[in-house]
Length: 548
Image (cartoon, rainbow, N blue to C red; front, side, top):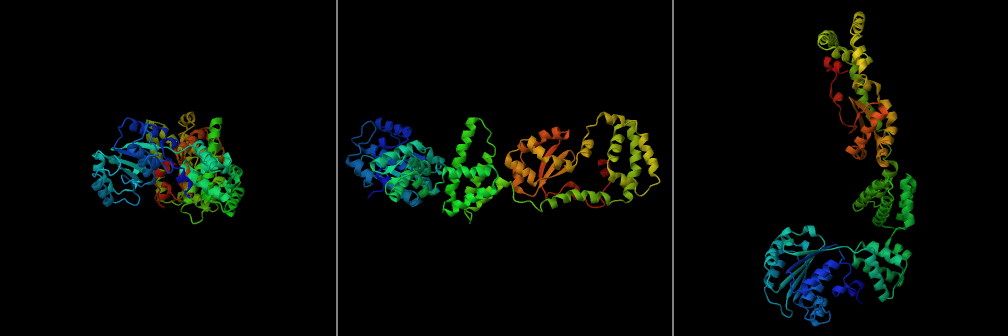
């Protein structure tokens, strides 16, 4: 008994489904008796490439052809169909890919055909030929004998050398639509007296992913299993297709951050013996439908795109993971919790903020005295030229308690004269009062605690996506560096989500609204060493105090 996909293989151009442009072009070439000597048919599996090549081979030799259509009944057509015609040579390049096979072809191609009027070579999966074999074939394609024709078929056009493609007429075979597959399956089911409802055939068509051969094979498989009575439920059970209710429940669990519920659904798939790759494909199809529905309504996609990307990543990792459901479980945790528990990770992040404080107290050496003697001298000189520099020095010195302690700890008695000098230079301070929004004043007004407290408001006002917001709030610790707010994290995953130009731009845009001044925003790993940390104890200079 012949299997269904061979039994219903197209024998004439009228049987070919969904490749109208290709069929029309080939028929016109036969009508005008001006066929090219080399054709290249490219497309995914089960789209009719080899079947079309065989039908075209019939048309090239059929004496009874009319309107570009082979008769399908003469001796030439029948022997071409069953593969017994010696003048139609089919070569499987996957198993005959070496230079020796192509050399043999080159030697025999010059011999005249035995029975038919033309000698035709059909080379299937031609992309599997070696580089040397392609080079050997090239000259024959460029200057073929008048009686020789080449029909090449491939599923991977990008692997064919450009020199070969340029010598062929290339046709791309598109995948079949769901409607085309269902229509063809209904015809076959009716002929074979198979009972199948439209929904069941639609599920088979979706599973075939645009390949007619795969669809017919699945139809035959399920018909044998169900004794020619196919229902949508039997198709789901046989092929492991998830129900729409299960997919919707899984999506709702992810959207509402219900980790336990989503993991329970994954366990139910495993207990039922389901294939997680099939489940991943089904869920991606469900999400795709949701995406198109939301786009048509003009609604926001929310976390939908993030979910699609995570599921795609999990699906790719299924092929290499020793535990097939583990990639999906990780995806669920990332989507519902944003990150694994971060306990213990924030401790190292606080150390960089403590180090500068300890280093600031450590250098009470003669160096501060030198700085003390230099600063009053620098003030009058600058005062004569421009009163702004001494004002900025005094303004920077007074708000920082560490600096004042630094300068006056060792000499309490001369501290009064120095304190008197500060009021002496008070006439210029009227100028700084006219420009209060200097970076120094804002830096002293803004603290790490204030930034940490306002992080939820920052994320809300910046309209960060849900998964990015979770990464921002769950893993980041802020620091102040000049006029920049630096957020540090131990997680490479979260940094990859956050450290983009778009996210930075959104956060920078709302800093002025929340903190009264536009601050630059950046992200870094907690292990990154800051310039302040690179200084060693005892290296502080008078220039360092001026920076304060």
